Image (cartoon, rainbow, N blue to C red; front, side, top):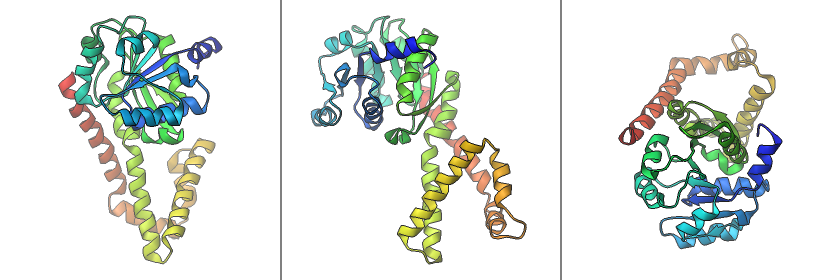
Length: 282
């Protein structure tokens, strides 16, 4: 948070969640684990899965609530976390209860704040955010963007909430599709790399357990080196690479197979796909 006053306000908030999927659970886990909000300040609802709501209530102490007028009346912040295909209908259901005093935060991929504004039919502040699945362990890379009526104060509140599940950066809304392609989809690229390295270790003669342990620790160490040293990745790579050594031999194979180009094209294609998915809403 940018100042102590905003932090105090954040702690006093009442928050409602429309949707009860994995990203909502990750946010609930972060908020409650860090005691950012009392659990009894949080209401959760979804389309029809009562068992899921009961599960979240038992796990995090939040309140299931299918009475939308009551939930909205009790909430300062409303999270929209349903599927993109359901958001228009959901917003039209909410439009009689959302006011200019509500802060609406959308974690729905591809749907712009302008469309949500239109469907809600009220000039309330809206913030769009893109966390990733690492939010489940408090290490999300979350990008967020302000809609037309969202002030710096609203952004500070959203930042406080998302910091409970990891790192937050603020960008113009048109850049959120890039964040979707880079860090939103990024964990899958890393897991794919782990699959390959782990498999190679096994093929060379290590047990699966040993190969997994060494691969994961290698990735963890490399990430910490990047964060701790602030060095460019190319600089760190060159320090590991002795002329004529094992690392150079391995890198030559990656270069010959177009490794860097493949990763670049993956991020760009995921970004393009995010734009395609959002096109019907623009």
